[in-house]
Amino acid sequence: MSEEKKLEELQEELIKEKEHSAELLSGWQRAQADYANLKKEGERMAKETVAWANASFMAEVLPVYNHFKVALNHIPQEQRQESWVQGIIMIGKQFSDFMAKYGISEIKTVGEKFDPNLHEALTHEECEGYESDVIFEEVQPGYLLDDKVLMPAKVRVAK
Image (cartoon, rainbow, N blue to C red; front, side):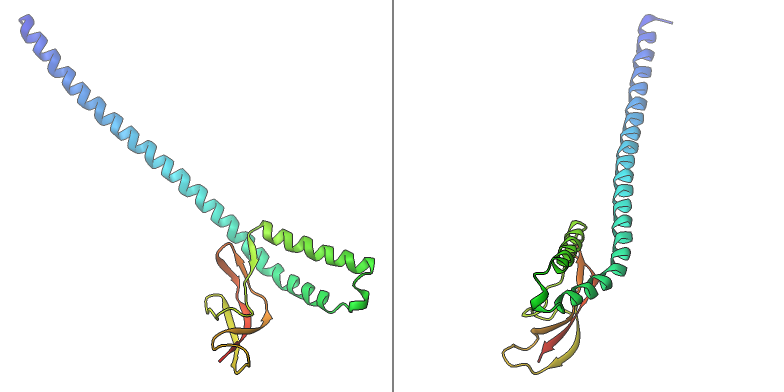
């Protein structure tokens, strides 16, 4: 076999190997991208699972917090400066800070336009000084976890 023929065969073989190598590299790059996407999706799902596990827990705690706030509001004015009352008020502040730390906030109500995504209307009634579809009383506070409703606010709405 002539040297020219051998050289031609080697060049053809080199071209085929380069093509094969490029295919393998392309496949490897796709696999790397797929793995990175899968990893991101797994992390996102884990975060979401933890957030909603926290949400489930907080949904159980929120009624206790609401009752605590009602109890604070019933402390007689003349006792508010006593040290034991100040201690209880500090506990309420810690509770509120704890909830904020985990992305839980109260839904705005009185004076706001009624939003069925955030509020549950217990009544629609005439109320002097309020426009139609504006909340004039909060019966029970509602809460958001980031932007998702954990518990809708129960309200009375002007008509």
